[in-house]
Length: 356
Ligand code: SF4
Image (cartoon, rainbow, N blue to C red; front, side, top):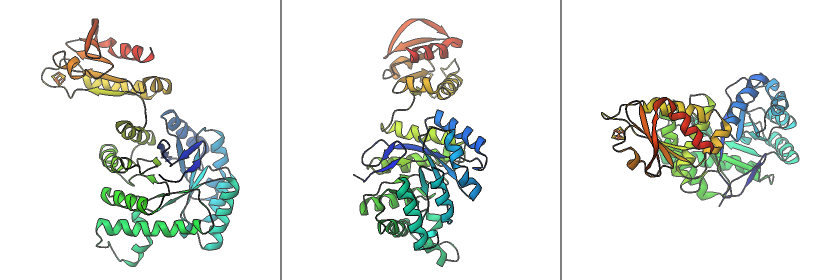
């Protein structure tokens, strides 16, 4: 069991629910755009939101952004400790900074004092691509994945020691890489050596499909071992979809509930209805409506392409449709119920059932 860190209303680590976070891709100096994006993320269930703080104008905007949102806000800072001090002053709920990169012991002391006084935790983010050890190489080092992971862990522990020496305990660590194996090895090794909670995820995971698959494999390997207090799925996609992917991973692992589980068949030569279109539309409606999302949580809904295999194959679903030509059978727990439903009424019927 790891130690715990408090971020806004959430206690991370120590066996508490794994929290989902994302990061805005708006300009933090544009408070209105950033608030709008965070609100959309909040509606999608994002629990912790991070913004880049590249300069003082961005840092000074933290309080303005916070006034427009309800979730904890994390300020992402590199190198400049003054930005961290300003972000804390402006009410950031957490800062992401590497103490070893902010210009020496006096600066670290100043930031730690400000965070201690304000009750603000820190995330140390040690990414494989920015390891200090890489500076001694002209190109790419010929390291095994294990050597990458060991180096990452060593540097993370060095960073952590700077906080520990000042008796600062409210911190998490992330050890990300775009390489699945290195990310898993580093997080495992760090968990062996410390009880510090981890923010886990791949970095630069890629496009929606490739990145989500890669992230799911890496994160499931870690989460199955109890490693990971909070997750972020970094996709080259709108942040809302990163949140969706994160929840789908947690939901599949039965770690969190989030919306329904929609099971649908891949369709085949027997299919005479629009399974793909129905599922797509259904998801669009449910995931755009926070209330519906909540009501649907834990429900297993089936959309099947035929009555031959449909109800039987989807026996485990709470309810669903087995489509035929222009209409479909409604079934509940594998049993057909009531009259046939025209295809243009399927979604309506499913939504109605969710609301019941
Ligand atoms: S449920 Fe029916 S339509 Fe769908 S793949 Fe199976 S046999 Fe084909």
